[in-house]
Image 1 (cartoon, rainbow, N blue to C red):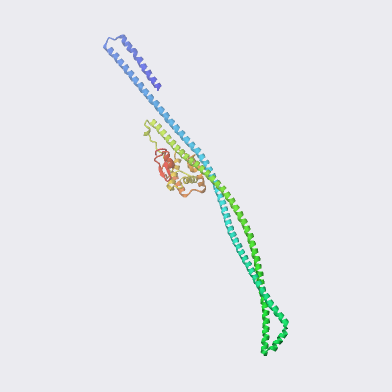
Image 2 (cartoon, one colour):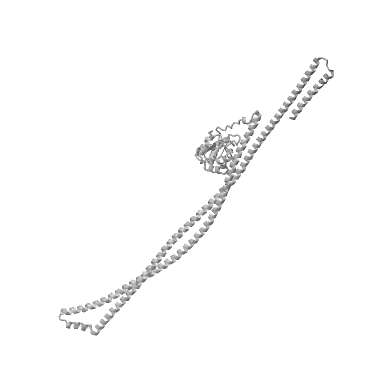
Length: 486
């Protein structure tokens, strides 16, 4: 601009220097004719007009220089905005990359701690199962012990009854002995009487005193009956003594058996008491072990809660990083709009940058199709086919956009773009194979089907938090093309 100003000043000075000698010469000669005066006046006017014109041209040149300088400044500012937008995008991608590693580390820690927690829970379940078995054994032992105690009580009652029976038999035997002694005393007196009166004389006396032969035989038979009765009486006493003695021996044998049985039961009771005591000690030890295992589980759960909180925080940061990337792309687009506006000489609002055409089919291998399906399943397994197709559309739109990597695997594995990949969920689904619905959605978007031209999706909570508007809600996700209003 200064250069143009200097040029204009030089031109103006040159004109003034050119017309000044003419004016001086005219004045000095003092021409006598009117035509000369008129000619001088015309020359002066012409010089004045030339000076004005030169001044106007100088001003115009100055204005153009200012305008050119302003355009250069605006272009520089636009270039700076583009540079900053590119730098912002690069920074956002770097943040995503860092977050990707942090999320991977947090996922690994979370999975490892969950595995340790599951092992602790399994151990606690095993201990509780063992404790339950011991408790069952104790219950069974106590039940058997109660049975043994009942048997001992029954045996003691039997022993008591047997002792009572023995005592009763002893009393019966004592009575039998007394009866025997009475019989023996009577017989003893009769025998003594017989010897004293001579049995032969007795029969002879009976013969002489008989009124008839019939009377004689009657008396003899009577005497014989008395002797038979006495003999039977003696035999009955002996038999009764023998029977009482036999019963006494049987009862004594039964008493010995019962006593032996009672002693055996007592030994068994002692043995079972030892088993119950040992089982209770084992149960106490298992309870202590269970308490320790419960403390371990509680500690693992506390660590898991902390790790989950960290993981959720990182997911929030990743959503922020996604938003930053979307914002950086929008800023880059706005800077390009301003530069185009300068080039076209119009206002930026008059420049419309059309959205990228990301429609159409792409060629993909079987592995890429399955990798895409696994990512769709990880992100939208519970969102129905519409939600799965929408996630697949975002991925394929990025594949065909010049703002993202140009391959399915490149888009999905780009740092910090898909939390499901960062967390290892996609790889786990790949190991067992994605489901049919997600494979169908993957094949559809590869073949060219799209739900929209969106480049981003997230939960509505984060979209609202970041001030994004005009998004499309499908299931639990919102889908949008750029940062801000869509």
